[in-house]
Image (cartoon, rainbow, N blue to C red; front, top):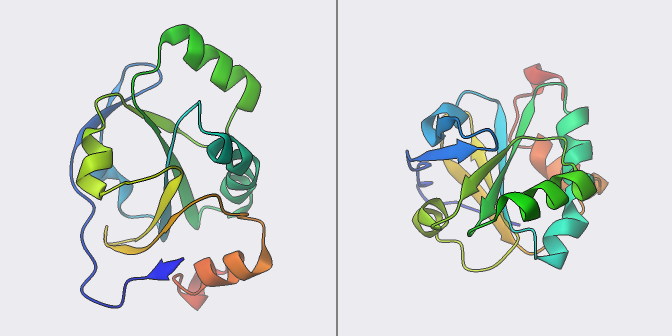
Length: 151
């Protein structure tokens, strides 16, 4: 993962839809101690390999880390149902069918994950699958969270 040492960019404010069609503004992502923003696609093998460890991170972070998935590209309802049925991530997903959010974030490959602080600043990014259960990765994430948080 690359830690951004310069002035970190802010998360852009855009409106996407969740799986029920509800409109969600990306500005609502800020406020959590740490946001893991993962761009993925149902056809991307490394993305699918990463889902179990992202789900584990989402379940085991005691509210200190929010995991948010962004599904890139057009995905028909049947393909989406199969994806959810087979891979069932334990974190919310938003749809980015026209790649508007992906382009705004500079996503060039999948999966791409951004680490965003509580102020909405992108502090790190990685392209490629990550084992989010790896103790080194967990220590890295913990380094962004205040010791008062208890993570």
